[in-house]
Length: 442
Image 1 (cartoon, rainbow, N blue to C red):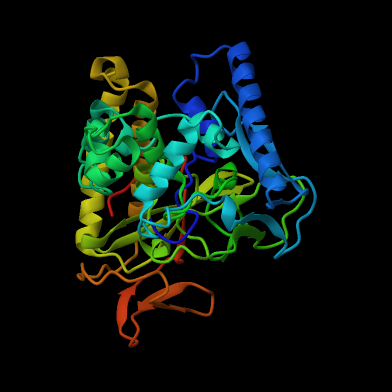
Image 2: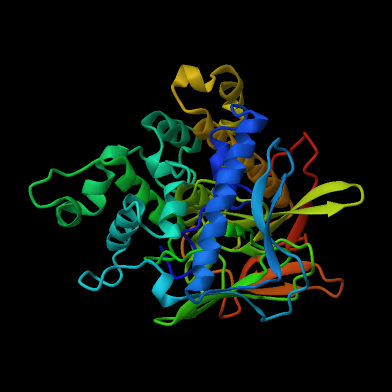
């Protein structure tokens, strides 16, 4: 975890409390069931907001939680929207330090295991806070580390050498390996064995997924994640020991949704450069909407994919964060061919035959589709590049200089001492026809 609002979980466009709940049950619940779920969720949220305001939190009257239907799905999710214009730098949310769940004074101040314990104790207590009740009602096991072994193995098989290490792990061993005997004794007493208590594991998962490092900040998980200047409009404001909150990055118009960024925020540190779309699934359980980020440090591959709506259809743009290597291009082609060959598996082997829960299977194949689209676009964008043979020393996004001709075409990428690293004949943001089914070799 890094210093950011990085551990909030969501799904695609999303606010986590709505979408993850439905991601495992979509198609199984009736309209009446969904209405009951919505009513229960709304009551928990209303109680949480009232409790926060009573205890000194500021939640702007200019925002509201709405349900909406994202493209391509048959259910609604929740998000935070502006019901009036919000001025640049205007505070949206401010949560006093006293309401933020954090490590106990006797524990290491940066130890999120202590935060997990405090979340567990709050959820377990029938007289606990509205925040504990709200978190207790959230969906279970939606990040990869808490999936079934079969679901984790399917993800690992699909990804191969792409993305982070998806080695399957037994959820029942998570608490023992992650936090150990000391915290188990603190909860259950020294005579108790290491527990696999379901509620404790839920507290651990919800902390990993939604904490800002080791701090659990009420109301943050009401906001969806989305990067890009068009979308990311709620900046982080923190005064350690006093409060933590959000302010508008720019003017937010009435009806606009308010978005956080979990990896490219104003206090995200190194994640701005090194946390990509595959990592987002691993940490938060969702495939992020465009723009998306893909990289491989060992092969000098680093690029962003964005989707642009135009009058004649939707197009993708590819922006490289480093001069791509020839070895990297070969790797992309090999991996694209491998993923395309797996398409039949998606249709022929259903989740029941693989013993993979449907919500886990859906996420695996959603990431599969995202990678196929991204690799096709990246390879098409390499036409005209003089590829470098350098495959190490991959830079941060701001470590290169770009030179352009008088028409604005990108003609070269220079390293910090002015040496030409790569020459190109296309713009740095290459437009790719995403609807085309033919893809030439690079």
